[in-house]
Amino acid sequence: MELAGILFDVDGTIAESEEVHRKSFNESFKEFGVKWHWDRAIYKELLNIEGGRERIQYYIERTDPDQLNRPDLSSFISSIHDAKSQVYSALMTKEGVPIRPGALRLIKEAKKEGLKLAIVTASTEESLRALFQYLPEKDLLNYFDVIADGDKVPVKKPAPDIYTWTLQELGLSAKACFALEDSPTGLQSSLSAGIPTIVTVSSFTKGENLSGATLVLSDLGEPSVPFKVLEGDVLGHSFVSIAMLKQFCKKSN
Image 1 (tube, helix red, strand yellow):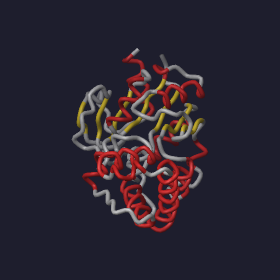
Image 2 (tube, one colour; image 1 turned 90 degrees about the vertical axis):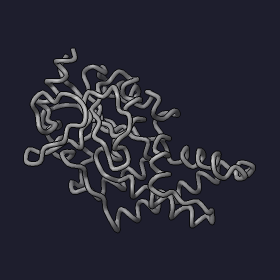
Image 3 (cartoon, rainbow, N blue to C red; image 1 turned 120 degrees about the vertical axis):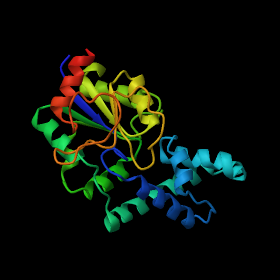
Image 4 (cartoon, rainbow, N blue to C red; image 1 turned 60 degrees about the vertical axis):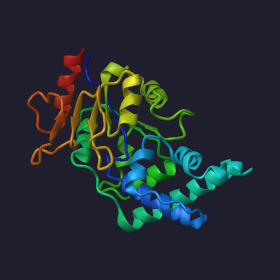
C-alpha cells in the first residue's frame, strides 16, 4: 500500500514544548494557592497521563486527597487548567519554543508531495494555536488537513480513539499512514489503531520502553545533521524523508 498520510503528535514531537507546559502548570498552581510543584521527575511520570485536567486529577488523587472532598472539584480543576492555558500562551509570547530537528522540513515535504497531514494531540486547541503562532513558520497549522486536539474524543491516549477518529476524518486506512510520536503513551495509542509509528524521543521520554515502534530515533534529522538511531533498521537513511517513509510503507505491506 502506498503512503498517503502522516499523523503528527505535537508536544515533544513537532516542538520541544513540554518544559513550557510544566512551567505553566506550576505558575497556575501559585495563582490558586495550592502547594503543588511539578519538578521534572514528577512531570515525567505525569506525562503517562494524557490531558492537563486528567493530570491534575491524577496528581490530586495521589498527593492531596483532601481536595477530593471539594464539592466544586471538577470546576476547580477546570479553572486551574484554564489559567494554565493562559500562562502557557503568555510564556510562548515571551520565550517561544524550539521546533524539533527535521519537523518543519518533513511537514513541508509531505505537503509538496500531496500527502494528507494530521495533528493528533491531547493539547487543547488554545494551547495548540498558541504554540504554532510562535513557531518559525507562522502558517504551519494551515498545512494540516485534520487537527485532532484534546477535545475531539472523550477518551485520550493511550486509547486508540483519537487516532481512529483522525483516520476516519482523513478517509485513510491505518496501513497507508505513519504516525510520529515521542512517548510510550502516544505509541500505544497509534499502534492500537494499527498505524506504524516512528518515535523521536524528547527530553522527557529518553530511556522509556518504546517497543513496537518501527524506529526509535533521537529526532527526525536533517540532511546536514543526521538523526541518532536508538532502535531499528533505518534502511540506510540518515534523516526521515518522504522517500524513507514510502520505503517502510511498501516493506510493511
